[in-house]
Image (cartoon, rainbow, N blue to C red; front, side):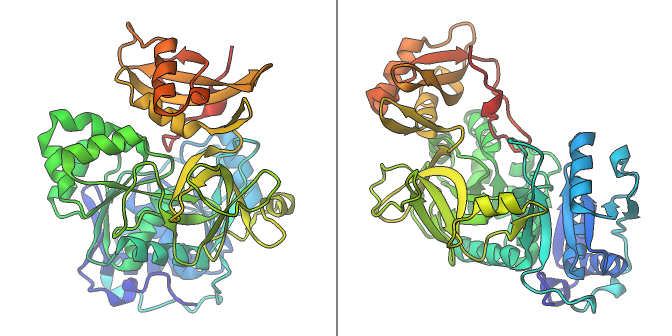
Length: 487
């Protein structure tokens, strides 16, 4: 079994690996702590990890991967019913948690192993454990999806998907062991855990986790030598809003080698505000739990606001029509569903052969459910989810994302979401959900319709506008459109 983290044995023992607030581990200390824990859980099959934003979570997952054991990250904010479903589904018999963490009653039947991060560095692991051999196809992680259409499904991510994605991103982003990453993302999902923690450790670099995202923390770490920032659009939106009044933040961001946004589309307006204030362009990438990373704007490529770049090395990507016919040529306008194929893909939904079979075509392409257009030079622009963001109105297929971007360019709009609702004449009418800058004087529906029509096309204008105090969002900052109910 080859280690996913050769730096545990090869990097200088005193090199910084992880920092969470005022707690940190060098590679020597991480190797010792993860090696000792790996020895305790070797052969356990599957282990649940109480995934708080703490050193212990990182050590637990690294230990599981070094032991060849599948780790199941648990969201500490999940309710008892959801946790009960996940634990029954994955069959974990052990939960790894930090000392002092209070665990809910749904975990009471699991053996608890407390993660000790203060292990004698002389016990540092010198290589992979002599545990049951693990192959590239063996599970590394079982990550449960959000479950918007039913109970969460466990996506089984093999070791080769983790290594391939992280190595492909290293190629795209020129990511090395000299990089220092700062982020404040949760650690129970792909973005925060795989990219944000395992990514730096595979490179032999370091990561500084903020615990909780804040612009002050980002600026502090960039001023103290951090080179990369990972965030989601809500974080970059807060940065964009803070920049006009915070020249220190602008200077700090200007020092970054790479700013990366993911998990949802970053509005073009926020791209433009950040670039104007800092001279930096935010790089977007596109991935899913089931596929890890599919595309990215390259560090040496052309950043295009609203685009998620080109397919990563080894990843095949195509757009298909509703009947599954591949779109033959790309013109930057024709909307199709993204399908991908490559070593980055998951192997199955655990215990759900029906869902697994439905997710793939006969020749191995994964149906993402995401809709996009593709430019002639290969750049991909996501326009939304097939289930919630593709609006069929007046014979046109319209992506909600481009209308949302247009609405956000209006000076009176703070946040925007677009959905479709049934219409006897058009099939579906476009509906805008707006959080106005000034709730006492919001822009009118006709004004917003004209604003969109002038930027895009008349058939893309919203026919109805709802005004809200805030848009419903999940833990990752994604807008939960299913919670937007029509009259």
